[in-house]
Image (cartoon, rainbow, N blue to C red; front, side, top):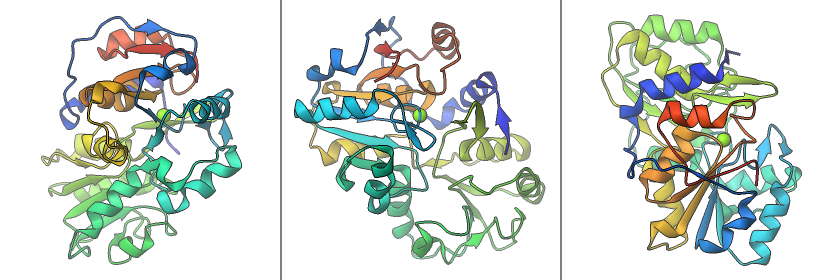
Length: 303
Ligand SMILES: [Mg+2]
Protein backbone atom coordinates (compact mmCIF):
# COMPACT_ATOMS: atom_id res chain seq x y z
CA UNK A 1 0.00 0.00 0.00
CA UNK A 2 1.41 3.40 -1.01
CA UNK A 3 0.31 6.24 1.31
CA UNK A 4 0.17 9.74 -0.24
CA UNK A 5 -0.21 13.23 1.21
CA UNK A 6 -3.13 15.39 -0.04
CA UNK A 7 -0.58 17.83 -1.41
CA UNK A 8 1.27 15.19 -3.43
CA UNK A 9 -2.05 13.88 -4.84
CA UNK A 10 -3.03 17.37 -6.03
CA UNK A 11 0.44 17.98 -7.52
CA UNK A 12 0.25 14.74 -9.48
CA UNK A 13 -3.20 15.63 -10.87
CA UNK A 14 -1.91 19.09 -11.81
CA UNK A 15 1.06 17.60 -13.69
CA UNK A 16 -1.30 15.68 -15.99
CA UNK A 17 -3.99 18.26 -16.80
CA UNK A 18 -3.40 17.53 -20.50
CA UNK A 19 -5.13 14.16 -19.92
CA UNK A 20 -8.32 15.94 -18.80
CA UNK A 21 -10.97 18.04 -20.56
CA UNK A 22 -10.54 21.81 -20.35
CA UNK A 23 -12.43 23.86 -17.78
CA UNK A 24 -15.21 25.79 -19.53
CA UNK A 25 -15.77 28.90 -17.44
CA UNK A 26 -13.28 31.07 -15.55
CA UNK A 27 -13.46 30.29 -11.83
CA UNK A 28 -15.90 32.36 -9.81
CA UNK A 29 -16.02 32.46 -6.01
CA UNK A 30 -18.06 29.45 -4.80
CA UNK A 31 -21.33 29.92 -2.91
CA UNK A 32 -21.41 28.28 0.53
CA UNK A 33 -24.57 26.31 1.33
CA UNK A 34 -25.48 24.18 4.34
CA UNK A 35 -26.50 21.03 2.43
CA UNK A 36 -27.75 19.67 -0.92
CA UNK A 37 -31.34 20.26 0.21
CA UNK A 38 -30.78 24.04 -0.15
CA UNK A 39 -30.40 23.80 -3.95
CA UNK A 40 -31.64 20.37 -5.12
CA UNK A 41 -34.96 21.63 -6.51
CA UNK A 42 -33.13 23.82 -9.10
CA UNK A 43 -31.90 20.78 -11.05
CA UNK A 44 -33.27 18.20 -13.50
CA UNK A 45 -30.61 15.66 -12.51
CA UNK A 46 -28.22 15.29 -9.56
CA UNK A 47 -25.04 13.28 -10.19
CA UNK A 48 -23.34 11.97 -7.06
CA UNK A 49 -19.79 10.74 -6.55
CA UNK A 50 -19.63 7.71 -4.26
CA UNK A 51 -16.48 7.59 -2.10
CA UNK A 52 -16.15 10.72 0.03
CA UNK A 53 -19.75 11.76 -0.75
CA UNK A 54 -22.02 8.77 0.01
CA UNK A 55 -19.55 6.35 1.61
CA UNK A 56 -16.28 6.23 3.45
CA UNK A 57 -14.89 2.70 3.19
CA UNK A 58 -17.82 0.35 3.78
CA UNK A 59 -19.92 2.86 5.79
CA UNK A 60 -22.38 5.55 4.72
CA UNK A 61 -21.30 9.13 5.51
CA UNK A 62 -23.59 10.89 8.01
CA UNK A 63 -26.55 12.50 6.23
CA UNK A 64 -26.08 10.66 2.92
CA UNK A 65 -28.95 8.16 3.19
CA UNK A 66 -31.27 10.97 4.35
CA UNK A 67 -30.28 13.11 1.33
CA UNK A 68 -31.10 10.24 -1.05
CA UNK A 69 -34.45 9.77 0.69
CA UNK A 70 -35.18 13.50 0.24
CA UNK A 71 -34.37 13.30 -3.48
CA UNK A 72 -36.84 10.42 -3.77
CA UNK A 73 -39.54 12.29 -1.81
CA UNK A 74 -39.16 15.33 -4.10
CA UNK A 75 -39.00 13.13 -7.26
CA UNK A 76 -35.64 14.63 -8.31
CA UNK A 77 -33.75 12.21 -10.58
CA UNK A 78 -30.26 11.26 -9.48
CA UNK A 79 -27.46 8.93 -10.54
CA UNK A 80 -24.31 7.79 -8.75
CA UNK A 81 -21.30 8.39 -11.07
CA UNK A 82 -18.27 6.65 -9.59
CA UNK A 83 -14.71 5.78 -10.65
CA UNK A 84 -15.29 2.39 -9.02
CA UNK A 85 -13.61 -0.43 -10.96
CA UNK A 86 -14.72 -3.23 -8.65
CA UNK A 87 -18.44 -2.59 -9.21
CA UNK A 88 -20.45 -2.68 -12.40
CA UNK A 89 -24.19 -2.15 -12.79
CA UNK A 90 -24.92 -5.82 -12.32
CA UNK A 91 -23.52 -5.83 -8.78
CA UNK A 92 -24.14 -2.17 -7.79
CA UNK A 93 -27.45 -2.65 -5.95
CA UNK A 94 -25.99 -5.53 -3.89
CA UNK A 95 -22.90 -3.46 -3.03
CA UNK A 96 -24.81 -0.41 -1.80
CA UNK A 97 -27.59 -2.21 0.09
CA UNK A 98 -25.44 -3.11 3.16
CA UNK A 99 -24.34 0.56 3.33
CA UNK A 100 -27.99 1.62 3.73
CA UNK A 101 -28.74 2.73 0.14
CA UNK A 102 -31.62 1.30 -1.91
CA UNK A 103 -30.24 2.14 -5.37
CA UNK A 104 -31.64 0.40 -8.41
CA UNK A 105 -29.10 -0.85 -10.95
CA UNK A 106 -30.01 2.02 -13.32
CA UNK A 107 -29.21 4.61 -10.64
CA UNK A 108 -25.46 3.80 -10.68
CA UNK A 109 -22.89 4.21 -13.47
CA UNK A 110 -19.28 3.31 -12.81
CA UNK A 111 -16.08 3.64 -14.78
CA UNK A 112 -16.10 -0.18 -14.86
CA UNK A 113 -19.30 -0.03 -16.96
CA UNK A 114 -17.55 2.33 -19.40
CA UNK A 115 -14.40 0.15 -19.42
CA UNK A 116 -16.46 -2.99 -20.09
CA UNK A 117 -18.23 -1.29 -23.00
CA UNK A 118 -14.87 -0.32 -24.56
CA UNK A 119 -13.37 -3.78 -24.06
CA UNK A 120 -16.44 -5.45 -25.56
CA UNK A 121 -15.80 -3.58 -28.84
CA UNK A 122 -12.29 -5.06 -29.23
CA UNK A 123 -11.89 -8.14 -31.40
CA UNK A 124 -8.55 -9.03 -29.80
CA UNK A 125 -7.55 -8.55 -26.18
CA UNK A 126 -4.50 -10.81 -25.78
CA UNK A 127 -2.12 -7.88 -26.41
CA UNK A 128 -3.35 -6.12 -23.24
CA UNK A 129 -1.61 -6.35 -19.86
CA UNK A 130 -4.10 -5.60 -17.08
CA UNK A 131 -3.64 -4.50 -13.47
CA UNK A 132 -6.57 -6.07 -11.63
CA UNK A 133 -7.05 -8.59 -8.82
CA UNK A 134 -7.22 -12.21 -9.96
CA UNK A 135 -10.96 -12.36 -9.22
CA UNK A 136 -12.84 -9.46 -10.78
CA UNK A 137 -16.45 -8.80 -11.95
CA UNK A 138 -15.15 -8.29 -15.53
CA UNK A 139 -13.33 -11.64 -15.71
CA UNK A 140 -15.27 -12.61 -18.87
CA UNK A 141 -13.58 -9.66 -20.65
CA UNK A 142 -10.18 -9.96 -18.92
CA UNK A 143 -9.66 -13.70 -19.45
CA UNK A 144 -7.62 -13.36 -22.67
CA UNK A 145 -5.41 -10.59 -21.27
CA UNK A 146 -2.07 -10.92 -19.52
CA UNK A 147 -2.78 -10.58 -15.78
CA UNK A 148 0.16 -8.42 -14.65
CA UNK A 149 -0.56 -9.18 -10.98
CA UNK A 150 0.28 -12.83 -11.77
CA UNK A 151 3.58 -11.75 -13.43
CA UNK A 152 4.62 -9.74 -10.32
CA UNK A 153 4.31 -6.64 -12.53
CA UNK A 154 6.74 -7.75 -15.28
CA UNK A 155 5.38 -6.88 -18.74
CA UNK A 156 5.71 -9.78 -21.25
CA UNK A 157 7.03 -9.00 -24.73
CA UNK A 158 3.63 -9.75 -26.34
CA UNK A 159 1.94 -6.86 -24.50
CA UNK A 160 1.63 -3.48 -26.28
CA UNK A 161 -1.30 -2.03 -24.28
CA UNK A 162 -1.58 -1.49 -20.52
CA UNK A 163 -4.96 -1.33 -18.73
CA UNK A 164 -4.79 0.18 -15.22
CA UNK A 165 -8.07 -1.16 -13.86
CA UNK A 166 -8.03 -1.84 -10.11
CA UNK A 167 -5.23 -1.25 -7.59
CA UNK A 168 -6.36 -3.87 -5.02
CA UNK A 169 -3.50 -6.34 -4.53
CA UNK A 170 -1.01 -4.25 -6.56
CA UNK A 171 2.20 -3.89 -4.52
CA UNK A 172 5.17 -1.51 -4.52
CA UNK A 173 7.34 -4.34 -5.88
CA UNK A 174 4.89 -4.98 -8.75
CA UNK A 175 4.98 -1.27 -9.62
CA UNK A 176 8.80 -1.28 -9.57
CA UNK A 177 8.84 -4.29 -11.89
CA UNK A 178 6.25 -2.67 -14.18
CA UNK A 179 8.35 0.48 -14.51
CA UNK A 180 11.66 -1.36 -15.07
CA UNK A 181 10.17 -3.69 -17.70
CA UNK A 182 8.54 -0.72 -19.52
CA UNK A 183 11.77 1.26 -19.91
CA UNK A 184 12.69 1.90 -23.55
CA UNK A 185 9.23 0.83 -24.81
CA UNK A 186 6.02 2.70 -25.66
CA UNK A 187 2.53 1.43 -24.84
CA UNK A 188 -1.09 2.32 -25.52
CA UNK A 189 -2.46 3.34 -22.12
CA UNK A 190 -5.98 2.65 -20.81
CA UNK A 191 -7.12 3.78 -17.36
CA UNK A 192 -10.23 2.37 -15.70
CA UNK A 193 -9.98 4.50 -12.55
CA UNK A 194 -8.20 7.83 -13.16
CA UNK A 195 -8.19 8.72 -9.42
CA UNK A 196 -4.65 9.32 -8.08
CA UNK A 197 -5.58 8.55 -4.46
CA UNK A 198 -8.54 7.56 -2.31
CA UNK A 199 -9.25 8.00 1.43
CA UNK A 200 -8.51 4.75 3.26
CA UNK A 201 -9.13 5.09 7.00
CA UNK A 202 -7.09 8.13 8.08
CA UNK A 203 -4.76 7.91 5.04
CA UNK A 204 -4.90 8.54 1.31
CA UNK A 205 -3.70 5.49 -0.59
CA UNK A 206 -2.56 5.27 -4.21
CA UNK A 207 -5.14 4.20 -6.80
CA UNK A 208 -4.73 3.29 -10.52
CA UNK A 209 -4.25 6.90 -11.68
CA UNK A 210 -1.15 7.06 -9.47
CA UNK A 211 0.32 3.87 -10.93
CA UNK A 212 -0.24 5.19 -14.46
CA UNK A 213 1.20 8.66 -13.72
CA UNK A 214 4.24 7.10 -12.00
CA UNK A 215 4.87 4.87 -15.05
CA UNK A 216 4.48 7.79 -17.49
CA UNK A 217 6.79 10.04 -15.46
CA UNK A 218 9.49 7.40 -15.04
CA UNK A 219 9.44 5.88 -18.55
CA UNK A 220 8.40 8.92 -20.68
CA UNK A 221 5.38 7.29 -22.29
CA UNK A 222 4.13 9.45 -25.18
CA UNK A 223 0.56 8.16 -25.66
CA UNK A 224 -2.28 10.19 -24.18
CA UNK A 225 -4.14 7.71 -21.93
CA UNK A 226 -7.74 6.78 -22.72
CA UNK A 227 -9.76 7.54 -19.57
CA UNK A 228 -12.90 5.52 -18.76
CA UNK A 229 -13.79 7.51 -15.63
CA UNK A 230 -14.13 11.08 -14.35
CA UNK A 231 -13.03 13.68 -15.33
CA UNK A 232 -13.37 12.32 -18.89
CA UNK A 233 -16.62 13.19 -20.65
CA UNK A 234 -17.66 9.63 -21.60
CA UNK A 235 -19.00 8.59 -18.18
CA UNK A 236 -20.89 11.89 -17.76
CA UNK A 237 -22.36 11.61 -21.25
CA UNK A 238 -23.60 8.10 -20.41
CA UNK A 239 -25.31 9.45 -17.26
CA UNK A 240 -27.11 12.34 -18.96
CA UNK A 241 -28.10 10.18 -21.96
CA UNK A 242 -29.72 7.74 -19.53
CA UNK A 243 -31.81 10.59 -18.13
CA UNK A 244 -32.42 12.33 -21.51
CA UNK A 245 -30.97 15.64 -20.34
CA UNK A 246 -30.93 18.39 -23.01
CA UNK A 247 -29.62 21.34 -20.93
CA UNK A 248 -26.39 20.50 -19.04
CA UNK A 249 -26.68 23.66 -16.92
CA UNK A 250 -29.68 21.95 -15.23
CA UNK A 251 -27.39 19.17 -13.97
CA UNK A 252 -25.51 19.29 -10.63
CA UNK A 253 -22.38 17.18 -10.10
CA UNK A 254 -21.69 16.55 -6.40
CA UNK A 255 -18.19 15.38 -5.48
CA UNK A 256 -15.30 15.59 -3.04
CA UNK A 257 -12.38 15.87 -5.53
CA UNK A 258 -11.59 18.98 -7.56
CA UNK A 259 -9.64 17.29 -10.38
CA UNK A 260 -12.19 14.56 -11.15
CA UNK A 261 -15.72 15.50 -9.99
CA UNK A 262 -15.54 19.30 -10.18
CA UNK A 263 -13.25 19.70 -13.22
CA UNK A 264 -15.17 17.02 -15.13
CA UNK A 265 -18.57 18.46 -14.20
CA UNK A 266 -17.46 21.95 -15.12
CA UNK A 267 -16.13 20.81 -18.50
CA UNK A 268 -19.56 19.29 -19.24
CA UNK A 269 -21.30 22.60 -18.48
CA UNK A 270 -22.84 21.25 -15.24
CA UNK A 271 -23.07 23.18 -11.99
CA UNK A 272 -20.93 21.63 -9.27
CA UNK A 273 -21.05 21.10 -5.50
CA UNK A 274 -17.82 20.32 -3.62
CA UNK A 275 -18.27 18.51 -0.30
CA UNK A 276 -15.71 18.76 2.51
CA UNK A 277 -16.47 15.33 4.01
CA UNK A 278 -14.16 13.36 1.67
CA UNK A 279 -10.58 13.64 0.47
CA UNK A 280 -10.25 17.27 1.71
CA UNK A 281 -11.70 16.52 5.18
CA UNK A 282 -8.59 17.80 6.98
CA UNK A 283 -7.61 20.47 4.42
CA UNK A 284 -8.23 24.22 4.20
CA UNK A 285 -10.69 24.04 1.31
CA UNK A 286 -10.14 27.64 0.17
CA UNK A 287 -6.39 27.04 -0.13
CA UNK A 288 -6.93 23.80 -2.08
CA UNK A 289 -9.28 25.59 -4.52
CA UNK A 290 -6.88 28.52 -4.95
CA UNK A 291 -3.90 26.23 -5.62
CA UNK A 292 -5.84 24.06 -8.10
CA UNK A 293 -7.49 26.98 -9.93
CA UNK A 294 -10.62 24.81 -10.15
CA UNK A 295 -13.64 26.37 -8.47
CA UNK A 296 -16.95 24.63 -7.72
CA UNK A 297 -20.25 26.48 -8.03
CA UNK A 298 -21.15 25.55 -4.43
CA UNK A 299 -19.39 24.25 -1.29
CA UNK A 300 -21.04 22.37 1.59
CA UNK A 301 -19.76 20.42 4.61
CA UNK A 302 -21.64 17.29 3.49
CA UNK A 303 -24.81 16.09 1.77
MG1 LIG B 1 -14.72 10.77 -4.16
